Length: 332
Image (cartoon, rainbow, N blue to C red; front, top):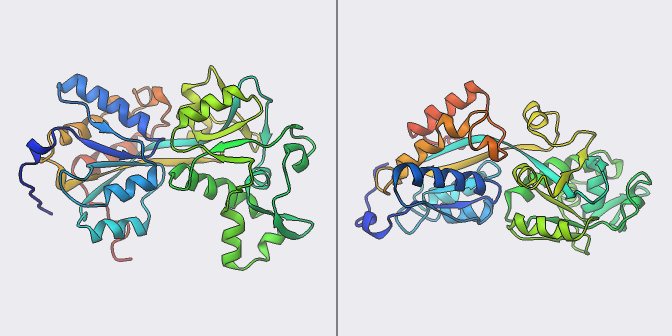
């Protein structure tokens, strides 16, 4: 799709990037490398959350709209339809690697090995008790299971606009609730509500899109836990430790192997109509797709990204560097 917009080079000399707080540190690292190597202005990278980023990204074509959005989940069909409606019809998808969702606490806090069904019971708005679905009565971990700490449940997590929240609901809450007979008996609509709705009575606290703020709060309260991407745990391992989920702790090895059961792919999406028009965009994409960034031992791996294997990485590089169009929803 050929698009021209007059005066864009004069109107905006910096690449504009929005999206996931989890993908943000990786994109920021690429932006710094790109600026150092080329002498071009560093791209403006904003942490808006995955959902917020998709909405802004899909708003239209031209200098008033961002060139790239990061995402801690794949684009939804509804978001693609919004893109289409606003003329954003030629988009490339880049799955850059994997991340493990971490359930972490201060190093001063208790060691925790918790299951997905226990996490569901701790954090859902409604839970099964004695065969009935009721408002969550659990205020301490030990009320869920006597083997868990006798401390109040305090968990800081992302807001509904976050891809991290979406992934946590899908990979932990919904899987955890499946083990209860009272849930299996529900209708489809009731099932979705009971399995995915986070509690709002105090123990779960929405902490916005700023993962660094969660880190600070965990340092201040050794009994509190936080939900965020593995990179933030990795970058703050001197202060924090990851809980085991189902007996497995998050690490490069367990996320890559799939042994850690709360892992997900990470993405960015680029408007192909902006390539060759926004100064430096093509060169920035080349840097993001470089072996120096994406391989095992590359600078994104050093910051916590779990890399793709060689075959998948080479396929990704070919598709993104050649502007292959995102087609998952075409014909659906």
